[in-house]
Image (cartoon, rainbow, N blue to C red; front, side, top):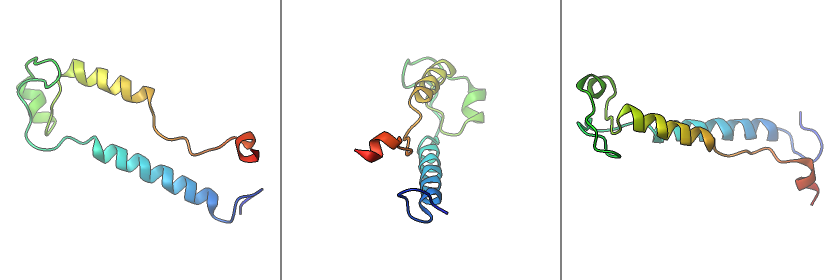
Length: 88
């Protein structure tokens, strides 16, 4: 059931698209290939245990934490629109 100006199924389509975007973003962030022995950002040594635990690791823990914090600041797309923007 849709309300207002939206057609039937529009809400579910919006939810499905948001989930698909999140899945694609997560897949694109997966490491691939062989692990590096040195961080590609700061050239620090990556411990062997981390290399074995995380397949395709490219960053040391410090750089990975920094990258994760930056990604939290930019969560992605907001598909919901305000009522005011729809009326313009």
